[in-house]
Image (cartoon, rainbow, N blue to C red; front, side, top):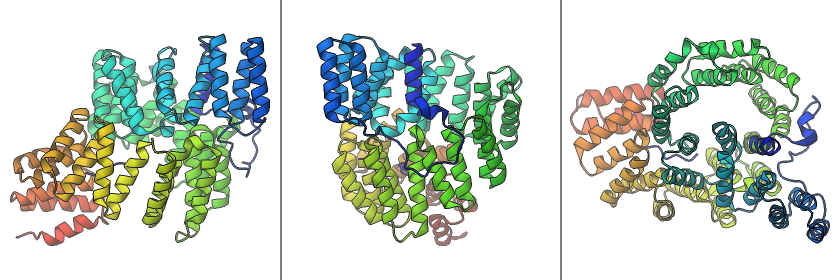
Length: 558
């Protein structure tokens, strides 16, 4: 197993906040070259705290909801978050049911580390929106990276448990599972949704995407086949999603045809330009990608996604300064995190032996936008590890954990890094704590069970832990691989063969699973079959040292 780490006015307001869309004058920025000024990712400090307190006091004296709302907004923009919370709560007593106050309270809760409160408020709002499934996707785009994976997963799992017949709850859990790469669980949830609404095109597309992510491309394509005959009858949004799923499945021709058709629409669908640009980028056709993005920016100069893609183009062309400028321009809302990390990666690329500049860039972003702090810390750790600075990454992670001790993602990352550095006992202690506080989280259960199996310790407990993870996510190849490997360590050959064969069939391209599958085949006397599995894996990953060693140490005729 590969351990995985690495309402009209109010409705418009929350969707803009959730999607990271700029509000106010930023929404109509002139089409000009990106500014070199650092991104405004967090409310800029404006008025003084005394002025904000005076405004709130005036609102209380006059019992005026408008003044209370103004005091809340001014305090939030000035990064006086605790004062903003007091103003919002007073505003809500004067105007109960005002969703704009709820929206602002969610952002304040996120800024001050009240993650569970923010998530609970968000799910309540989603249920009352006109298009709740679209709202869930929008929420995950902005909120997902800001909160610990375990908190989001636990909230959605509890929602399904409390309301097992609620399709919105199942959709939320499936979306979170897809985002967090718990794909087998996502497949199960989307299958439930499709069984209860067989005519839902949106669910069919989501299920096809989940099967493809799980490694079963033929099954994903088979789900799409009934839709192809009537594809022109679908809405532009569904056709765009169809194109994205086609691209994910490797059908570039089909995706290109759909995107070009959407561009010819009247009015044209701007996101289709992004699809074409992404395909050109993947093929290293940078000029073609730039042309598509230029047309999109001509339509909307404030399109941050197009700006982010333009940065990728310039980075690919070897123009780091231009890339950084575009990254800075795009670093708003949901793009703040990837854009900041991309800038740090370009800094590190200048001299991989000296990571100080890249770390300084991330630390500055953490000061500017504390709500993104834990995710930025995880990104910094990933960059440092890839550059060969694992010890520095461990020190950085320890400091981040002291600052955000409630963030389970940081603990999980520390455990994975400890495993990489050989500190397996400390990793087991950390994972035990995570499992204690998140007893149904398949990632934590699997990580602990697999780590115990690697050490050859407490194998029966390891098997129990992985089985509990499989109960949550029964189709996940990584979990099946873990169970097969525990069985291998227990010398339960029949169980190991059964689970590893299924894992390899579900995900034939995963070299770790191929390595384990070959080991059990060899152990049970299927020598030629084992070597065939390893030879196929070596073609897909020619630099995989484990596969090379397996072929060297296990000759064709033992």
